[in-house]
Length: 159
Image 1 (cartoon, rainbow, N blue to C red):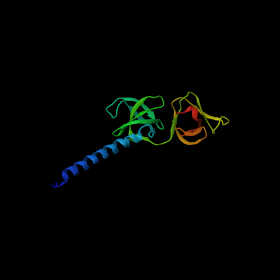
Image 2: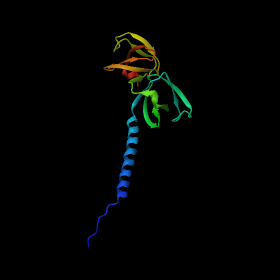
Image 3: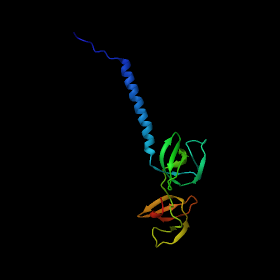
Image 4: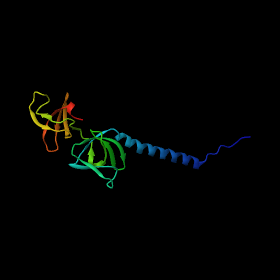
């Protein structure tokens, strides 16, 4: 006896539907993973750091332009981050960009006129001051503050 092998068109549709749903799920979740652990920089003069992903959450503190953060999670238009002190918060994603930046981790950091201790001190800064990175030369970083002040800082003094 010969049996006829009939294909079920609905079964093929269901299979393709499930594969499409899985691919979409992976695309959405993998795009968030691409941000995980990446370094970003606050790109506006002042930004609120919140306790959760939305304006209905409390403001924990504010950060200034060039403040570096490491994104650890995304929820919609919000990014959860960790900063140089290990503190966590949420920020609206459009307020950050991929701009190279650093923040001082020591008190009384010398900002010099050139990349080395033989250069004069242009100004000093305290812990927690953020700078945009202009360029690097060996263990020295040419930086610019939000107010326009520029100079060189040693790599060991920043995060």
